[in-house]
Each structure stands twice: as C-alpha cells, then as structure tokens.
Image (cartoon, rainbow, N blue to C red; front, side):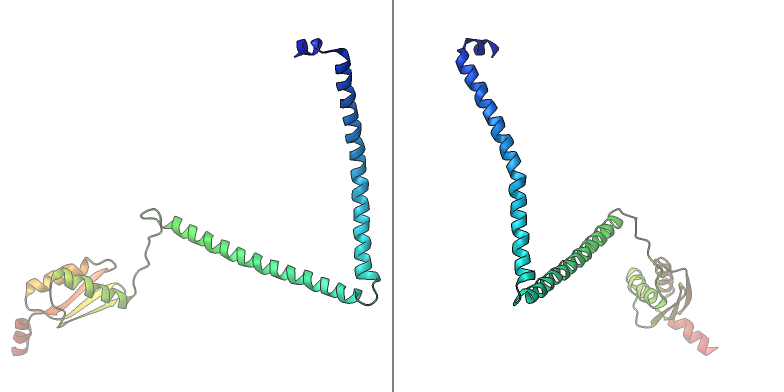
Length: 191
C-alpha cells in the first residue's frame, strides 16, 4: 500500500488530506450543534407542556386531572398485570417442582397409611379376588391396621386362602380370623 501511495502525484495526496481535515471539522461542528439543538427542543417541549397544563385558564385544571387519572390507571393496570404474571410464574414453578419430585422412581412416593374404611375396602377388593372366594357371607372390618374377617365360607382351604391373601395386602398389620365353615357352625349349635 505504501508503494502504491508513493506512485500517486503529490497534489492528489494533499487534496486527500485536505478533504479528511474538512470532514473532521464538519463532524466537530455537527457534534457541537447536537446538544444545543436537543436543549432547544427540550425547552420548547417544556414550554408547550406548561402552556397546555398550567397557563391555559379554561382547560388546564381538567387536563391536569385527566393526566393524573390516566397515569394512575396505567399504574393500576401494570400492577394487576404484574400480579397476574407472578401467579402464573408461581404455578409454573409449582408444576416443575411437582414433576421433578415425581420424576424419579421411589422419590416422593411415600404413602400415608390408609384409614380403616379404606383399608377394609382394599382388602375386600384385592384379597377376595386373589383368593377366589365369594364375598357373600363374609364381612371385613379394619381397626388401626388390624383386619377382622367374620362370616362363613364353604371350606377350610378357602378360609386359609382368604387369610393369606388379606395378610398380603399393603397396610395390613395383622389379620384376625373369625371365619367358620357351615359344618363347624352346625356342630357348635348341636353341642
């Protein structure tokens, strides 16, 4: 590049330098005018606002009140929007926390013990199905995790199956067997 510049005529290089100096001076002058112009426009704006909201005897008071009400209304709207956004964000965060808690198997799955009525229904649903015995003459009660089976079944094998199946249900601490067969009930009445 320096080699190329040395080949150009001297007058051309001087003209280039002169144009560069003029551009610098023009930029400096423009930079000096910009703050002055901005100050002039700001002063004009303040004057126009003062004329509109202070010096106008017929409408200035109304305009001031309207401007104040519009500003307050905008603040109220923004406040409500902020509350709405905060509630939405809270809900999203709750959902993420819930998904994170239940994403891994075994985490957050600790169940509270069933109440007595729910435990009795659970035993009726699972134990009778698993043992394959009819529910017709059997009642199931539960008290503090202890399941009481009362009633009549056709054979000792059915009784043993039902007791075993009831003991295998989650939440059952112990099974109290008060079941009997029709033959045992007849022999007790005959004695």
